[in-house]
Length: 140
Image 1 (cartoon, rainbow, N blue to C red):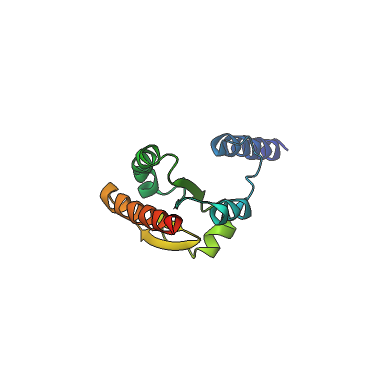
Image 2 (tube, rainbow, N blue to C red):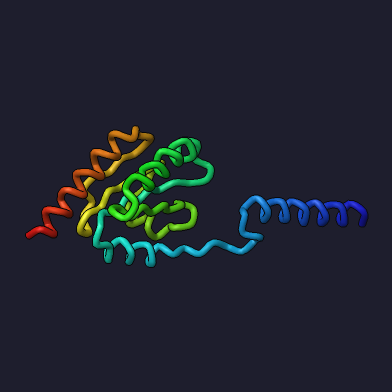
């Protein structure tokens, strides 16, 4: 009986730790892939979508770089971060098999895609090309 109680206590303790580490108090995260897809399709500006995961070290290393780009292009480019463990519908649609994976979308079309860590000039070049296409399309 004592062994069973100890086992149950350990399981409950481990469950509490897992909930605390997930950061959501045990509530499951909702896959709002459709809402994100709708925002991408309706966007009047280019979209930079970053597929990442909390357990992906390269994704974590790239996060500050993407945050800098987001500040630099604020109001001109929509930045979206999609956690592959939560946004499974979007992950399947974009056929994500490795991370980080980044897509630059303009006028509902993927203009550039990257797998793995890239440097800021590479992303900046892709964003600038998408902005140029967007501006050209709007001027017609």
